[in-house]
Image (cartoon, rainbow, N blue to C red; front, side):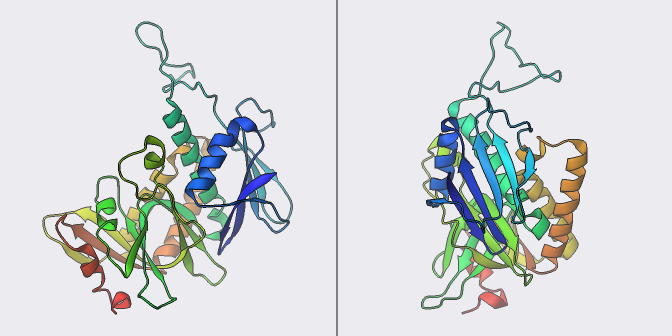
Length: 310
């Protein structure tokens, strides 16, 4: 079975396609993360298998099956291609006044599955201290240096993190501006992998940035900057408690499509795991808050942080 293997400092995940009807989600996912098709090895950890809506696996959409010592196996069942946009509380499709039903467009259908798949991948790292978060990612790598350091640009939609990520000049490089996978290795260090901006991939927006990313080239992460708009550009340290509260909301945003598929018991377990992971994370990184002015040269302010002084 052909697969895309996502290699990280915390282990690997294979994503496979078991049904031709799931091929378009599978192909676009791998292409957008700059991954090559390969065969799964015995060392691969968790395994996600994409299947069409009609496939009978005996499990729910994200049904999990134990698959041996290396990891877990998930059957990721796609919705029917004609999926109503809105459902009533009783589970029936919402209808217009003329009795017709509004269905998801092809782009909406793809976006829903790519977002869910991204969140499921993040969930595979929960037990190892990792998580998927709604944030941008930049790296600092001076010319001639092999050492690279990552900065997480965290903020809600409209906060200006995409604008901020576009302000950087070498030796700063923007890697993503919407989703980032954070993993924790055995030594307790955190590494960040960029994810594409799925809306730009699917709706073919004029902006070409982050329609594809290099997932296999992560950066070690030591700094988080919380972005917000303000009347005066100001970079200052953020407290651990403040950072924890802000990160909690951003992880919830990145995983909302995943959580919707859970029952109450699993939601409680999900909340517990990512809260513990974030608590550990904020104790091991430096956190700052920044009021962004559109006309400000943001990267110059960031270089005032001691670890980025050249």
